[in-house]
Length: 75
Image (cartoon, rainbow, N blue to C red):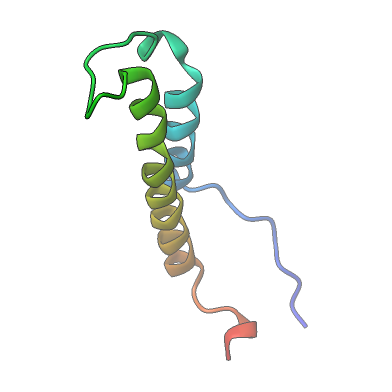
């Protein structure tokens, strides 16, 4: 049985830092306007990153899986 070697970081993994930086860099969204459907910018900006983060994580997962090929567990 072949042991898995160390995984090499790919450029796609850099995308995982985007949501973290976007949410933790408070001066970028520390304001009330523009409002969206009555919600201040501070709140809807934070909530916008929930689906965006999921999409980015899914995208990175798909590209990483395609790069590594099918695993032995799948079939």
